[in-house]
Image (cartoon, rainbow, N blue to C red; front, side):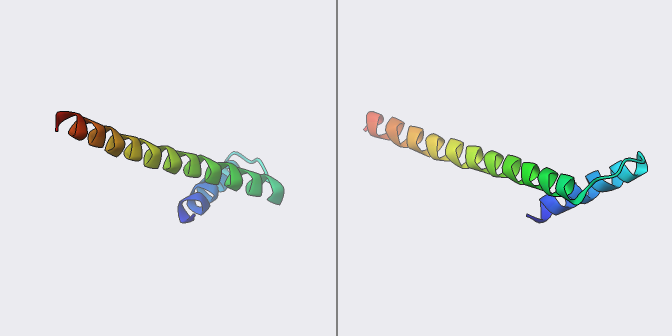
Length: 64
């Protein structure tokens, strides 16, 4: 979750440099979106790893 806070902090600073203002709700929404993206990426990584292990097990049993 610290990565999300850092990304929001960086995004907030970029917006300040561009002279745009963010409301607290905008910051919270952007943090939520980033957290959901991180969660989705982590879920897909775990799923791919599980499928890879499952595929290797099937190949092993077919060779036996």
